[in-house]
Amino acid sequence: MESDVPTVTILLLGDAEVVLHDLDQPFAFNIRLYAKHYRYEFFDTASPTNYTLLGPDFIILAYDISRRDTLNSLKVHWAPMVNETYNIGEEIPVMVLGLKRDLRREWTEEEKTREGSDGKGASVMPHEGLGIAQMMRVDRSRIQPASHQQQWPKPTPHNNNPITAAATAFLESYARAMHLADPSNTGTSKNLGVVAAALAAHYGTGCTAYSLTHHVSLPSAEAWLPGIAEHLARFERAGLGCDIRLARHRVEPVSEGSALCWLTWRIRPPPREVGGREGWEWENVYAYRRAPPGGGAEEGAKRIGAAEGAGDEGWEKPEGWWEFIVSDNELSSLLARVPDFMTL
Image (cartoon, rainbow, N blue to C red; front, side):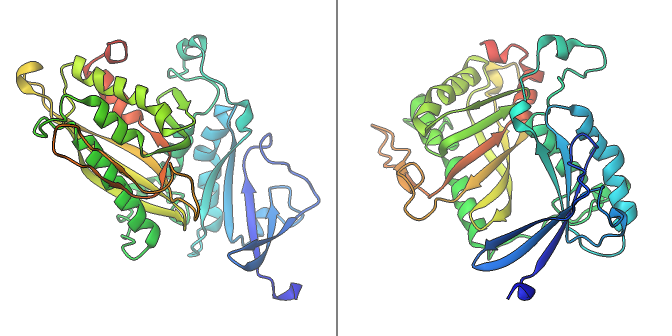
């Protein structure tokens, strides 16, 4: 019976140029999720019922990917409005959503050098939207006021969640692959090809890597191998070495099949070769996707990390793959210490 179908009220907020503002509301959709039927009703600021009087179950803060000002508007206008209007003790989930992805373009040198541009162009890159979402804490119910954003408790571990266990096993395998470059691992420290192959095995079809203003998507794990090997080689040529270890990590489930992973890496350069340089840490964000039943060979478990002549038979990589990686912190920390790192 239609009357038995739960209704989910969703409020879409954003600048006038971003959302539709059609008077014929709500926009209703009937969906089926996990064998249950739901009715989604979307409202925006043009709702016949004043949107501030709605009691939404979910709020979406939308911005135009091709217009940076609409993202800034979420921070200075829409987020405070949500706090003031819906700060009534309810736990309302809030999400940041970038629209018009097809209009995103790479930043030009003219844009980056323009006065007041902060080295950025008009288009919003994925890591920037993620950064704003994290800053506003929209992954933890209502938006927290700026004065309290640093007072949120650390996320409660989801130790009994299957996707958390799967993502943790996967990231530990990835860290083990990176540890192959540790000079104490006889037979592998000088064979960056083995390390690169083991790392690349964790990258899935269409995986996208974001680093500052650049991003690249490649069709397979094999396609990632040359680039990873070259990146490791730059560490060696910079005199930093490749003794890079996982210092700590955090996993947050997104769905039954995916999770976001925050991995903090620590590098220990050889002191005599780099003038006594101290090691440092950086944090990258990885999106883990669990392999569906009947997934392809790249998505399933397979043996990796074997080093010829080292007596190491490797290990079995858990199922799944990285969907995207954001390594802004890694690259910016490298460039701060080795300005010509990318041209070595």
